[in-house]
Length: 320
Image 1: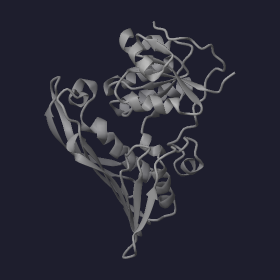
Image 2: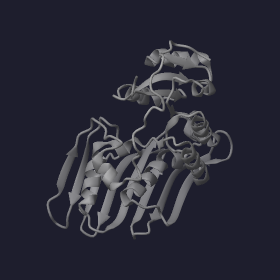
Image 3: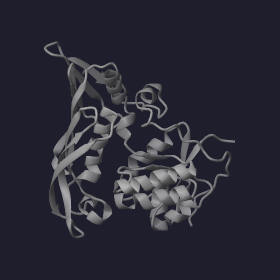
């Protein structure tokens, strides 16, 4: 009998170099299979990452009784299709951001998850860093008073012309890459959904035809009176910060989207008083069921995934 959650990986994108070791280090999960479009590539990555089973198609992995949950690391435009197929196959889903390409697609996914009783989580890793436990703690303590402005920026230079971000048909562009972070963070800080949205973008020719956004600046107006200002881009100098301003003070967080092991400084400013600097060390992630986070944003942190079945027979490296 086992309480271990058995993970399967859909895709062999570069991001799995970090996500697979992270899953392998969890205390309640193990990576037991990886799938690619070709058996050769799946075997290569399985051997490289110490994964027991390799599958020559995504369908073969989803059909495996040895998999409880899947991590989807496919191009953005394929997320909806393979989330729905994973749910139909009885698998929980952790999907790279963005969850899908439109609100309608996200609604379809939510309905399917409700029908199946399975969990779907969008992979915004920043929410589980200790820096956000401190941020939530200060906001809950009314450190800034009535929230007025949120300003968040996230940009970097994606580089070469062969980068997936320059292909419209694969879901590329700034909004779906870095932009989803700044919008998600604005919603998290306010705890609301925006009532009004305005945005302006800069564009270039996509590698596969049409036009694609390279940078976006926008504004979100929330029902409680707060306004979020954001800017983001994938052809710009690196920028990565969050500023939260209210009637009683201001919080400034550097590196809000940094990696788990990276430290951050959260500054607290109050009308002429000395700046309070909170240094937050990277390291252990927050648990999805952490008490502080569930109390402050219960709708954002689902209960931990659990295997749907207990017990299994461990298979050797194989393919389908």
